[in-house]
Every structure is written in C-alpha cells, then in structure tokens.
Image (cartoon, rainbow, N blue to C red; front, side):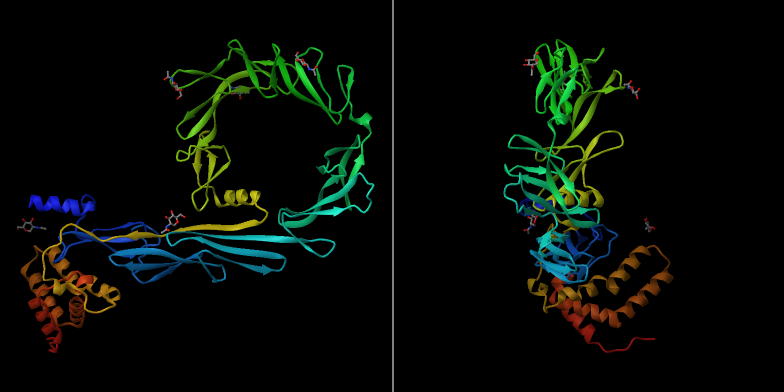
Length: 508
Ligand SMILES: *[C@@H]1O[C@H](CO)[C@@H](O)[C@H](O)[C@H]1NC(C)=O
Ligand SMILES: *[C@@H]1O[C@H](CO)[C@@H](O)[C@H](O)[C@H]1NC(C)=O
Ligand SMILES: *[C@@H]1O[C@H](CO)[C@@H](O)[C@H](O)[C@H]1NC(C)=O
Ligand SMILES: *[C@@H]1O[C@H](CO)[C@@H](O)[C@H](O)[C@H]1NC(C)=O
Ligand SMILES: *[C@@H]1O[C@H](CO)[C@@H](O)[C@H](O)[C@H]1NC(C)=O
C-alpha cells in the first residue's frame, strides 16, 4: 500500500492539494468545484459549473450555458475533463457585439464614438472613447486635440501664421487661437515672447485671432537696489548672495551663492554640518538647530536625502512657519512598484501589463502612500489628460479554468464506464441532484431515529424505485456512467435496465 501511494504521489502532483471531504464545494478562478468519490475514484475534485461573481454564494452557470453582463459575453465551456469560463466577446451599450480584437466607430452628430475590444478569452478589455471635431472657416473638420495653422497673406509681416487648436473646455469643444508663429520660425503661445530681427514681440489674443505685438523696450527693464537691468540679463545682487534674471520687466531669482558655490532656488547646501537654504525671497535661510532627520533605527540622514521604506520612498524635509524652520519630517513622496522597481510619484499613475492596467500612487489619510487601483473618476481624468479624445469607459473582464483531479482510480470493468450517448453534459443535473442521493442523505441524518421513521423511509425508497424520477435517473446513470461517476458492473446495469423496463404502477 505504501509503495502504491508513493507511485501515486509521483503520478498525481496535486496529491497534496486534494484534502477535501466528499460533498465539499468551493469556487476558484470563476469555477465551482466539488469533492466526490464513486465506484471508480477514491477521492476526486471536479469542476461542476462557472460562477461569474467568483465567490461561493454566486449564481452558478452550467457547462454549456452563457452569461452576459453590461460589457461582456461569457460562456461556461467543457473541454475534456476541464471546465473553462471564457470571455466570448464584448457587448456595446446598444447590445451590439464587438469581437475580441475588433472595434467599430459610430458617428453621432458631431461626435464620433469608438468601441474597442482587446485581449483574449481569459482577459479582455472593453474601451469606449469619443471625440469631437471643430469646423474650420473653410468648412473642413479638425479633430479634437488637433491644430491648424492660418498663414498670413502679408509676406513682409514679422508673423507668418496663427495657431488654432480644437480644444476641449469642460463639455464644450471649440476652435481657439492659441499661439503665433514668427517669421524666424519660433512658435509662441499666447502671452509668450519672441525676438524678431532684434525687436521684442509678444503674442496676444484678439477677437479675430492671435497677433505678434511690438513691446517697448522701456517696459522690459528691471530695477534692483536703484540699478536698471535690460530684459534677458543675468546679474548678482549688490551683497553678492542672490543671482537674478530679468524677464520682460520681471525679476526672477535664479539662485544663491554660498561660499562661492551656486545653489538653485528651492535647494539647500551644507556648510560643514549646518544646512543653508536658498529661498525665493532675498537672502539665505538657516535651519536653526535642525541638521537632518532621524530614521527609526537611529541613523540620521541629511535634508533632501531619500530612503526606501517598504512600498514607498520618503524624503527628509523641514516644516516652515513662514518665519522660521520649526521641525523636520520624513515625507513619503513616491511609491515603489516592487515588480519593476519603478518609482511613481505621489498622485501619479503607473501603467503595467499587456492590458496597460493603471495604478495610482495614492496618499492615505495618515500621509503614507500606496499603489492602488484608481477610482473610475480618477482613471478617466488621467486617461483623458493624455489623450486627444475623451475616454468614456474602460472595463476589464477575466475568465478562468478548472481541472479534474483525483487520488486513486479504483479497478473496474472499464466497458461499463464510457458514456454511451452524447449530451451527457446536459443530462448531468439529473444524476447529480437525484432522488436517491437525497434520500440517502436523509437516511443518514436520521440514522438513530425510531423504527417508525425507518419504516416510512423504507416505503419512500420503494416508492422511489418505481417512480418516474428514479427511473429517469437510473436511465441517465446507465447511459452516462462517466459523466455521472456511476460505473456499474454488468449485473448492476442489467438490474437497473429491468427496473426501468418495469411498467408496474406504484402501489397506493
Ligand atoms: C555672481 O557672483 C558669483 C560669485 O560671487 C560669480 O561667480 C558670478 O560670476 C557672478 N555673476 C554675475 C552675473 O556677475
Ligand atoms: C538604518 O536604515 C537605513 C534605511 O533603511 C539603512 O540605510 C541604514 O544602513 C540603517 N542603519 C543601521 C545602523 O542599521
Ligand atoms: C511648526 O509651526 C507650524 C505653524 O505654527 C505648526 O502648525 C506646526 O505644528 C509646527 N511644527 C512643529 C514640528 O513644531
Ligand atoms: C491572455 O492575455 C493575458 C494578458 O493580456 C496573458 O497573460 C495570457 O497569457 C493570455 N492568455 C492566453 C490563453 O492567451
Ligand atoms: C447513534 O446511536 C449510536 C448508539 O446508540 C451512538 O453511538 C451514535 O453516536 C448515535 N449517532 C448520532 C448521530 O446520534
């Protein structure tokens, strides 16, 4: 026996996982299984149906049957000894079928809607996008997100073209002028500047379009500590600490000099062990008594240094009251995707896998970060920010497989065990949920009852033997012994046949 078991262990790799009790049912990967035993199999598990909800309480779809939800069409398919819950195709909102790998576009007024179905039978995605067009003065259509250049008729003009874009603004899509092209070939957005033949010009929007306007150079000088500096010049403050840039009349601080070293605005440097910060305002800020952050294990890291902590990255920062620095903090600033090693900044998104599944690095109430599935609203916002069309829907469906497994095949008269007719699958419920099985269960649960109950049960059984239900069940068991798991000996088959053929009426 021990040797036989050893051989079985080698033959049946899933031996260890088969620790179920006859009658147990469970759901895994959309497939419902049962644990069974019969004349052929000492202990086995077999798939008996598909469960779209993927949980034990969910509705069961029989092999061969179909299931449809708002977006997909599924089928529960028997394939040899396994059962598969397959995605067959996507379904459009007006019940139109879209095959996997296909798409179609429908035009609906000025709107175009495209429905796509991609993936395979175990993983598929349905997407619906819409885009709108603007009408150009010529009557031509320009798709949402597209740009169009309107060229100037005057070849001596400092401007060669206006830039028009078909832009979405909330629910409205319209044609809007968004920039100018200078004769030097520079593209300038509205309110941006360009130098044409040494003359400073600004692109401005008017009722009928966008134009480059000459700017008086007097309006573009900057003054600091009584001195005047022209546009596009870089200079130091008189104390030598701040570096400024003059941009169209506005002073822009670029950085600080600390002991001759340049530090950009927003950055800091250490002089010895003391950190010094270059802020947007004039001069330098110091950190008082703070020199860095202390980690849980006692190590001190410097300001702006980072450390990986579980699924996130933290950075050593400071808290500022508006007047002084009053504390330090280890702020989570990015998530770490352990599979790829990629870092995703807070509130940003990661796309992964063949179906480009989207995850968001979201901040929890306690300040920690976590990579998780975005809400539908977040997802659509993200998707639409990157696309020239408007994503209306993106749904993913999954399917699953389940196999038969068994522990020990008992010896039997094999001739008695093949299905004798096709369609045994459809007939299976008759042998599965049969009268005699239920009766057996009833008898078991009433084992220690009075003799009166036992007599009543016996009568019920006798009745059952001649009843129509019982005959039908017996017939199915004889015709479909493989499917029903009722492998009978020749004598048993003969006995059943005579029982079925018996036309005696039930005693009243
Ligand atoms: C500003 O000062 C720094 C050092 O003090 C010097 O290296 C740099 O050249 C100066 N820049 C200008 C534009 O004067
Ligand atoms: C403390 O933790 C940091 C980050 O996890 C690590 O780099 C450092 O080596 C640790 N220091 C000690 C003393 O364990
Ligand atoms: C720093 O000051 C701000 C504003 O006064 C306060 O909200 C914050 O709690 C202080 N932080 C620390 C670490 O003391
Ligand atoms: C179906 O697609 C998924 C990912 O899109 C892939 O992991 C899987 O292997 C595919 N299955 C089949 C049967 O092709
Ligand atoms: C039935 O009765 C037998 C003997 O009287 C006892 O050992 C057994 O535990 C009982 N079983 C149940 C289910 O009550």
